[in-house]
Length: 371
Image 1: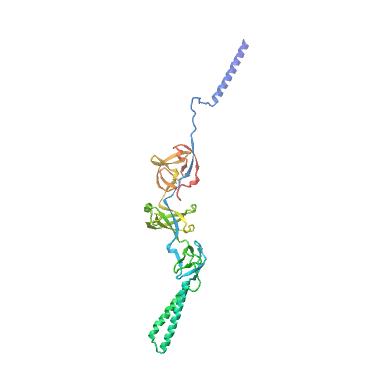
Image 2: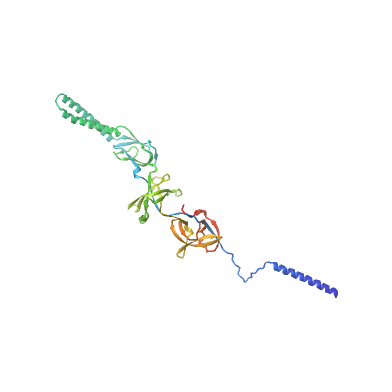
């Protein structure tokens, strides 16, 4: 009986030990408080967005016009000759750059010009003979000195006529050379052609001396002022750096062919412009130093506008007012905006204030201000 009691005690102690270990294991194990009937909480959504840094800079409000590059009228030289001639050699082409002294073309006098010179020489010979005969009659007392005045005047007039024709180049081949550096703007004749007296042969324009004629919609006339800055860029090479210019002449007449108002702009530098090239002119009508962002950053919001920035990994919504704008950027006005804020430019339509975001910089839109 005594031995039986010892076994019972040992058994109880073992059971107690096992139950205690099981209880400790259960208490130490993480508890799963969910049950099949309880809803599982969804993870917080994270929006993927792209941002640009907010900078302060100059924003220009512009409108765009198109036109063509033309020479200045006062820088255009027309080459002609005062007698009928024939083009013997044509040595230049339209658009060619020439230097001072370069041979442009060679002329030989036409048949009518040679006939005019021959008639002048015959008139001079006849006047000289008449004058000699008069001298002999005066010596024989058959004429007076008063008669001599008329014949001498005839001789002088004939000599002047011959000299002028010879000085003009009639009677020999004439070479036309460039009097200054420039560009051949217009070639009006061809080799072998007979050219009338005074007809234009060539037009030469000073290098880097041309203007841009832009066609403006009549309703934009009120925005134009002489001296306004214009950024000029060839349409065929839009990636090139724009040439700066200023409005010099604003016409007050609608072009009957285009139904547009012509505005003439003087470029500061013309190295990248070609005569007769089709160009785009961006006329700056106002400018301000302000916060500006890409247009896609600003969202319409209940009759107003808003944009999102990212702070500590979450979206922050800002109500903004807009000011100047162009086709790429818009001025935003809000007291809480600061330089270097991360402004959302892509993915902002899906955002709500306070939403977690994963932001990446968008280098394709630059800094967000007009430089």
